[in-house]
Image (tube, rainbow, N blue to C red; front, top):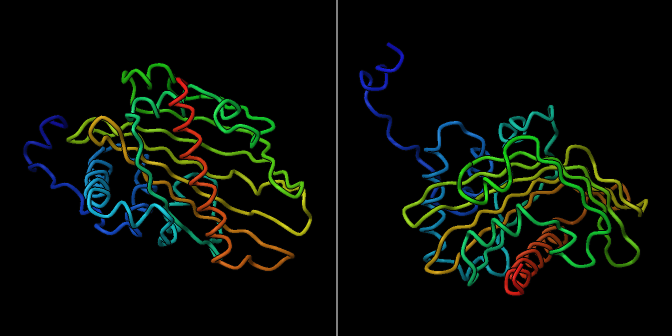
Length: 256
C-alpha cells in the first residue's frame, strides 16, 4: 500500500521557490539536504532565470537576506544566536563547464587552487565517493575540513568546517551546489578580531559551453569586542568570493 500512496493522493506540485536573489540563496542553502529534490530543482530553475536576466547586477556583490534559524539548526550543530549575521552574494560567469568546476572543487586540494592563501588544508569525505560524484555516478557528498589560512598584516585563521555537496538536475544539464559552515568559532591570530559564525554556499549552473554561478556568505564577526561594521564585513566577504571564483577559473584554464 505504501508504494501506491503517491498514485492515490496525486502528485504534489513543485514548491514555490523565491523569485528574488536575496531570498533565493538562503532558500537554496536551507533545502540543500532535502531528500526530495523538488525544492532544489525549483530553486535552481529560479536562480538560472535570475542570472539569465540580471547577472551583471551580482558581479560586484549583492546584499542578501539573513539565513533563518531553521536553516542553521538543520545543520545539526545545535542552537545558534544569529544576531549580527550579515550576508552577501556574488555572481560569476565562466568559460568552463560545470563538470570542470566539480572536478576542481571536489577532487583537488585548496592548497593547489588558492595559491598562498592556505597554509594547511585537510578534507575527509565520510559520505559518498568524490570520484563517483565527479563522474555523475553519485549525487551527494559529505566531508569535514580543517584549514589554516593566511592574510595580510600577519593574520592567520584556523577553521573546522562541515561540507555538503549535491548535484541537481536542470533543463540545461547537471548543476552543482555545496555549502560549508564553521563547526565552532575560528581561531584567529589577532586578539581583537573574532569570527564566531560563517555559512557559505556556491551553486554552479550550465550556460552554453560554460557556466554561471552564485556564491553567498553569511558571517558574524567582532572587532575589539564590538560587531564589525556591516558594510565593511560585506565588502571583505565579497572580495573573498570574487577571489575564489578567479582562482578556480585560473586553475581550470591551466589544465587543473
